[in-house]
Image (cartoon, rainbow, N blue to C red; front, side, top):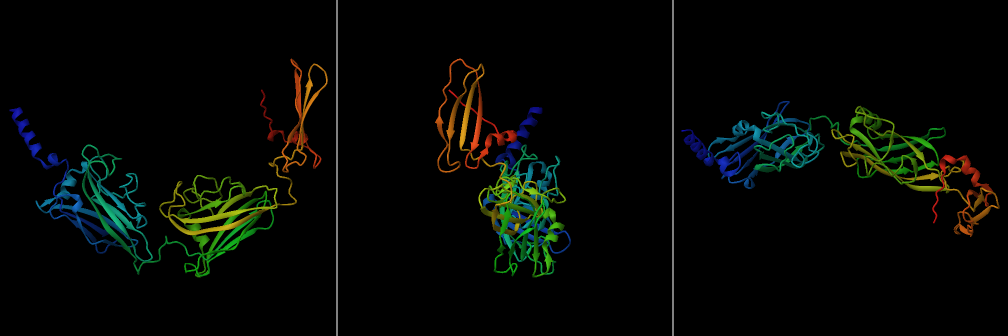
Length: 461
């Protein structure tokens, strides 16, 4: 009798749609999204229909999703089979361990979740409000907060339902399992004329001032940029470039102002420090510190930030800069300052590509020689005469070998003027003397004074 029951059970499994087609739902004809404002108001619905339920490629979307800015919505999804009058939402709930909704949306349309959804990357944030028996998300209910807008912003909103029996995990992706449907709606987020101004909008900035204050004392140096019409047609322009002195440590502060509305933007940035970050790019070799060319191209490149936000992440209203020691009258290059507005996305790895741009300015910069400063400690010595002296340790006449460069660092290279000629089986002590005959300097003595900075290397047959 037991074998008969097993046979009947086997026939039942073979006859089931899930076994025949390898998917949990069949003949999906209607999908409805309902966005309900959490603070009250009229719900927004979006629908898609496949009248014959013959596959996910034939869904017809009925109009766009129209949301209002700065609003928190609860999204519920309803799935129906009108051919068999089957409520497939209930089937998903009952088999929740095998189902997972994935989402994709145009970046910047939502404040929460940040990013663009988890279809491309499961780890990207999604605000699921329901879970299965294994405490894994499902997606029949999710929460969304629309971005604050000035005007209307448009994009897309995509929903994918995957059937993942036996493969649904905390890391299973949208490419695993069987796709029940994959539908994309147009999405519009419109301005609410009765809402207050967006707190997260990009700042209107008319005046930017960089102030370089020598840390060892002396007059501060300023560089400026101005945009008299703010967000109008005229771009912000450099009005005074940067001119610094060599071998000097500066503390640079940035101040920003909106002269049209008499607003101190610097103060606003300090109040919202966890949403703002300055990035820098500069001509390599202008600065001893920070080394390199700035963190605009690579977030990990060094910048000497002095100020940090409430999450201990850098801001950049105050930074330190040490100019290079130079031997020329001046060296020149460029100095770029970018202020990014990164509400909800500022992290220890966020880059210049994340968030909105408040300013992106490039100054010409010049480093002038200080005629009263000592010679650069790290400069290469000017050497005109090199002498090697081999003294026999058992006694006897010393043997010399010489090289000379009469014009020092000029166009003539240093040349051998006397080669080395030694005697076999002899222990010698070799000494090296170096001289700058142009300036009558004993370079050997300088090397002895700075012995922790110099080292000779040798190669021989």
